Length: 273
Image (cartoon, rainbow, N blue to C red; front, top):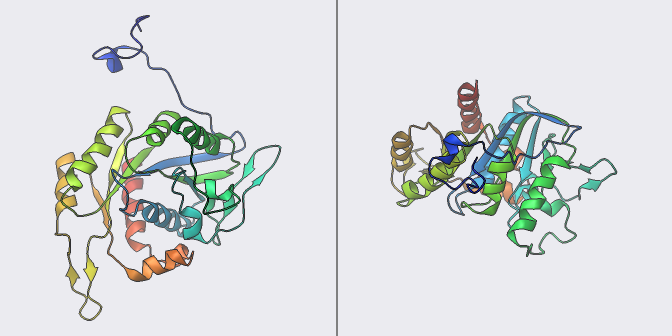
């Protein structure tokens, strides 16, 4: 790399050696597959999808963990009903476990008050995410799912650069802006050389409780068309389900039916090989 280049010259990504920003994983732990769950905007159910993927993998006998990288809007502990705080030892931080054994680490497991706002600047938040990666004693894992904040800001950039992701899943909803929003997340991943494993469409439809008919209140086929344009699989289409929302509010996400996400995981395993 040229002394004055700093990686900014045209075509530099293919011509110059790139600095490796990856953080070492916790030395007392191992993980086989690391999957980030992202969204181009908030409010699409990214944390729900992350939780359900972890639950589906856990039900399939995999040793599973969730790293909650959404530092300013953590919701993973509540979904799993975890109230106890994480423990610190001389060797590192001990993550909490869900009722069924999913390892969980979130900033809310370190704060005294779950409702206290995290008013930190980007570099501090990014540093916490790195600490969760290398200072938490995760043990031996088959899957780690990383719940990222929405958008393409500091934390997604930190995760993409610092953590060796096997790929990401983009969560979206079937609304008019879906194509632009998905493509922003897709293009960021491609810019960072992160594989995009597919799209999960949340809030796809409502199922009539009387006749079982699917009602597509936001329209049908928009995410499918976007996935086709990008050459990605549409991994799952999840319905709007009040029972699921109520279970998450009660901290009982592990009681939710995860068949759709189990099928999505099978597709992901085929892609990863």
